[in-house]
Image (cartoon, rainbow, N blue to C red; front, side):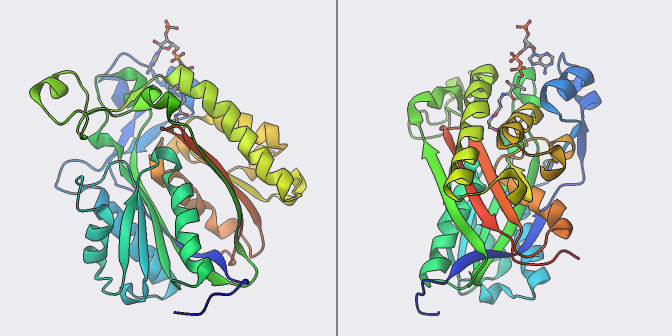
Length: 335
Ligand code: UT7
């Protein structure tokens, strides 16, 4: 472990991913609930999502695959990892933490780790959290993983939510760099509106009973219209704030990396920032809303377009409410 230094930024030095093979298309959903492809595409931007299925694999499995790929690409071994931060709202079980399962799956014998629950902002919060271990010199190699098996908590009889979510995982390696890496963050939490997007059942307030199951309390509940109103303003506000306080104009920003909840929210955010659509990472059409995984999955898909020093703004809004924006400078050349 190195000694603390004012020059240690936490840079993303590798990205890995995992997406299940099975596709759930809009036409598949037409056969399950009263909906249609045109409504889903125009209201959300989604065409299909990936589903992990029920063969005993869950969130930790996807996280492990994504982490393994990220380490391999960087030429690191699991023994090199100091800390594992797993952002998820669909842990394999309430405890032990998914991070413990990932540590064991990887054989990361020198690592400790923990889970972080911030819904769709999970990866953003995880990045800030993981970065601090690197910045202070307490760790040299940190894995930050966003992973969610949303299909395990989605009610496939509720057309207002089941069309939105998909399964997947993305992982990044954080290491120290003197110049590039995480530069600034603005994060918020506001629990007042916790009822607008939540899963009520299964915690200590409503432990599982026949009644909680009968009342569909172990599924995602969302008041979409209300959440939309908050998301569309808060996400743009926080992106503009992080740009202004770092003296960044739209020309200075190479990419916006937004949480993928709704194409209309992404478009409105980019517009407020003055960014053309070719500077916005979007994969909601292919994967839907994978909750904590959307941002690292975008980084994975766009990695080849990036060069060292590129200015990225990462942003998310999710249940809690939780939201924020981070200013990150990219560390390595695309292939
Ligand atoms: O990721 C965490 C944060 N989450 C978000 O940011 C999500 C924010 N919310 C949204 O993205 C949008 O609110 C939704 C995509 C969830 C819904 O879009 P909307 O434009 O807000 O639709 P709405 O809820 O206002 O519903 C409009 C109509 C309603 O019918 P009436 O009342 O106008 O007759 C709904 O019943 O569309 C109906 N509807 C559907 N129709 C076909 C709702 N779901 C569906 C559906 N298919 N799947």
